[in-house]
Amino acid sequence: MASDTKPDCLFCKIIRKEIPAEIVFEDDTVLAFRDIAPKAPTHVLVIPKRHVDRLSDTTRADEPLLGNLVAGVTEVARKLDLDDYRVVVNNGAGAGQVVFHIHVHLMAGRHFKWPAG
Image (cartoon, rainbow, N blue to C red):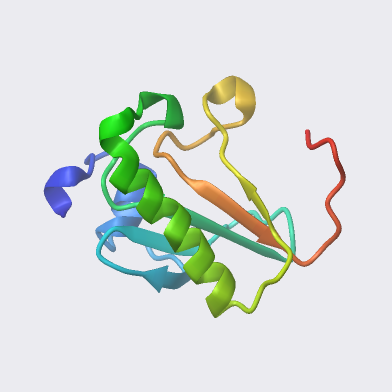
C-alpha cells in the first residue's frame, strides 16, 4: 500500500503510521480518524489509502475507490452508532479543501443548518 501514497502528503503519512491519529476504522482500502480541529462533536475524516488529490481527479475507473470511501463512511457511522450525520467533500482550495488527499468529513452531534456554507 505504501506505493500508492505520496511521501509529502499529511494523510499519506497517517496511513503509513508516521504521524499519530485517533483511528476509528480501518480496512484494506480506507482509513478513518478523528479530525484534529473538529467542527462538530463527532468529526471523522474518511480517506482512501490510495492517494488521489481531489474528487475532480477521479474518473469512472475510480468507482471502486469511491465506493469503498462511501462504504467506509457508513461503517464508521454504524460503529459510532450515528443515525443523523452530515457528509462533506470539499474539492479544491476555493471550496475549503486544505489537505490535498481526497477525504470525506463525517460530522454529527449537533444540528446542521441548510443551506450549508
